[in-house]
Image 1 (cartoon, rainbow, N blue to C red):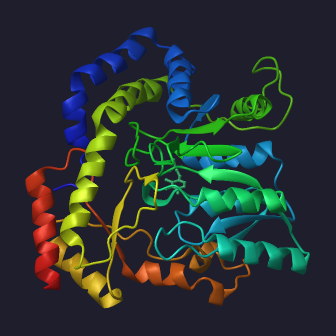
Image 2: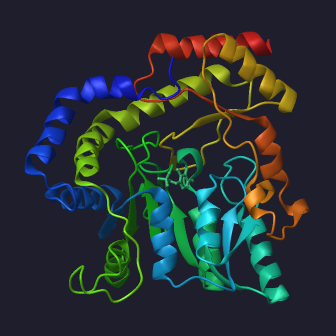
Length: 375
Ligand SMILES: *Cc1c(COP(=O)(O)O)cnc(C)c1O
């Protein structure tokens, strides 16, 4: 059993996929080919925003957004303490300082009450200027944008939605990657919509921001790429990856998102009462980048993981350490007492195999083994 079976997906898409890739190779338009522009239009339409700018990966997407806003030295950017490293790495990379904020006990996305306290603390301290917040659509579920957008408005913060795991999810019918002033996603192979290598994209409603991002993406180009008006990056999405994504986006829309949700519902129905199952907020839809259960304590979590491993069932721990305890952030000052949920989660979470091609008998085996261990 695979944690995320990309081979099975390829087999199902093989004919279309091979043709799409062969076409790019025959055309040899490997950089900025027609498929890149087409994909950007398809993605913007799906998400429901005006502009999509593709780029080389989800981390670059976040960096490009901070570049476009001129965020750097002496700026504070608020990030959840429980997320993939990139979300905060890009802040330090831009020369600004990440302020780690705890996450909600149920949704595991940024805790808005604690966020407001962190903003107030930063203002009172006076060392850094609050500039932006990076909510993460963790495991596929949108952050609490009702509260978050109000807070951002109150304090004049830019919202950079990290939708690397959230593509396809929604809140009240509005799709993830549409909530930020700029939103980003990743097409890393294991994400809800993945390509065959690295890839990423940015989304924005604002035409001026879109133009800036397009410039930063290609060496700060002006009228042409040999007219350079600002210091930028080389962060394009390959034409081959765009062609792969066009095929995958069709399958994602036609059946994958629905099927992965069906599997998540089945896990939840069968595992309720044994473990804490994911809590999806009212009106939210998850794209199930991960299906994460919570155990009583570290011993039970590690015990279950070993038990499943011996039964040939792969699981993962996302995330084994809160960001504020990563060595790379040892220099960042934190309020340890304000980060209790995030720290506890790292000891108790376990991600189970889930993807649209998971077979019924595979899922049944995972469920039975978990029930057996906890009985
Ligand atoms: C995967 C991920 C990223 C980074 O995406 P890459 O394409 O791997 O650079 C950023 N943020 C979160 C929350 C992620 O899960």
